Amino acid sequence: MTDATAAKLDLGPMPEWQLSDLYPAADSPELKHDLETAAAGAQTLKAQVQGKLAGLAASNPKAMATAIRDYEKLHDTLGRIGSYAGLLYFGDTANPVNAKFFGDMQERLTNIGTDLLFFTLELNRIDDTVIETAMAEPSLGHYRPWIEDLRREKPYQLDDKLEELFHEKYQTGRGSWNRLFDETMTGLTFEVDGEELSLEPTLNLLSNPAEPKRRAASEAVAEVLQDNIRLFTLITNTLAKDKEISDRWRGFKDVADARHLSNAVEPEVVAALVEAVRAKYPATAHRYYAMKAKWLGMDKLSHWDRNAPLPDRPERLIGWTEARATVLGAYRSFAPEMADIAGEFFDKNWIDAPVRPGKRSGAFAHPTVPSAHPYVLLNYQGKARDVMTLAHELGHGVHQVLANAQGPLMAPTPLTLAETASVFGEMLTFKALLAAAPDKRERKALIASKVEDMINTVVRQIAFYSFERKVHLARKEGELTADALGKMWMEVQAESLGPSVVLQPGYESFWAYIPHFIHSPFYVYAYAFGDCLVNSLYAVYEKADKGFVEKYFAMLKAGGTKHHKELLAPFGLDASKPEFWQMGLSVIERLIDELESMEA
Image (cartoon, rainbow, N blue to C red; front, side, top):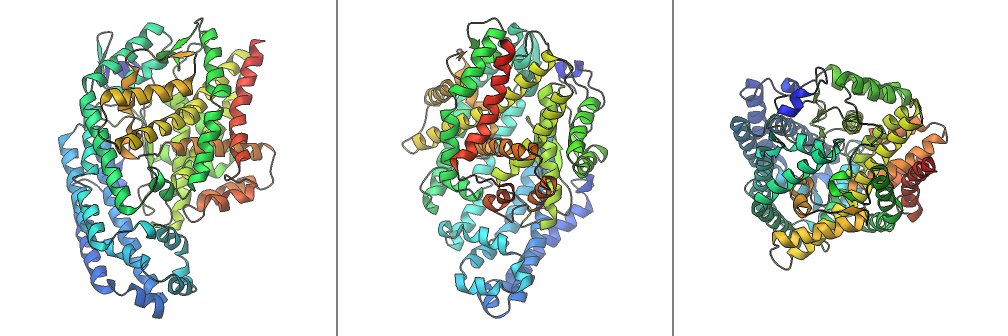
């Protein structure tokens, strides 16, 4: 840890991931062999079955199943190469060697993928009756969930040459803009009280006990973002226009329809979630921040005070060893198998935890491919929220390990359900800490922290979604200025945070550092979906529902093979019903009720 502030933290030794489980090195013979084998395999598969899939479905479903298995094997190899290049790059995006390798691999993989593009396009042109009859053959029927998911994209599929053009242009289009954003953000430094920091340690200061430090960090972020606002505005405009072009050509009617399709969730279900959360802004975020202002002795909070620790309990640093024990203990109390899987991430260096210059900000769990294992990236700085982030990403990791049995084509889970295990892991950790709280003061601090996490996960993410909708709809009418983007941002933030939070000058540029807007348009509602889903799921668990653990593991093992209705049915839950979302939001309200009762 070489950032000056991070270096002062005594958090104990932390793991850095060992990517040799994927490949020994960027120039290794193993990687070269896989690239050459995949390129040759893609050309062979194309020569053998292009133009013949419909005939195979009608006359020889077993041979078609064999072709899908060959395609799946290539998918795994290409995924392994792409994962290695991406993880190496994310570990140090400032390293020009890593950046070149990442770019070169993207180009090689795109070229190989071009030879495979015909496969899914041709499969989708097979007559519905023919493919349905063919899937009576068990070896082909095995792939039914993948085939059905694929065929939902059929109405938005273009002809082969256009699809090939979209595919090949990605690396010089959206992919390049994503990379420009990442490398720009990684290279920014923020001066706080004479100290030069990267983004993660600077944002970490927004939960510092001292108001002047929080304010200085916020003003540093605002100043640097404003200095670079023309670039971030250009990136946002370009990517929004790029998406509009793609959506228009494919025939998507709403700006978020493509995301809903990839998430296997109905637009009306998302609309019900958004409506329910927005209706609860006053009862959740507005009410909580009014209470927090009183705790801090303020009439109102400035935006940099939202995540300040409680005044009677300065936040202590939590060392890595304690964080590990806390999360694994919470997991073990639920299910030993869950803790055993999560424990492998620590024991086998599947986690990259420390803050480093050049390292990608934030946190994620990367599934890589079923023939390998997931990896977790953190920027651990010893805060309670960092422990919850560890629990969250390990939840993803456990989910990915359990789903791997479905294979490369069916292991991936739609984003809405992909957040289930992560948020459930957070809830287990929170409940374990709450049960061990020694007194009322500690309990209050834990509940307040959880409420803030829930507000950040539900209220803040739905506000982000509302902001994205405004941006993409407005972009259809022409290019957006930085002032216009800032105005939209301030409108949705004011609505969601409420009258007790003052959005001070400079906050209008904070939209610019959110990576989800760049990498995954409209991803953000998945967090709110997952949090409300888990709140409802946890309520079932607390009622000592018989066989809950077994049903929960079956849900995770299903990967992407089942729709959310099928997965939630064993728990008696249905996300299409308004009361489902009300049940999830009521958990947040009850925690705020408990905090209010402590004030009485």
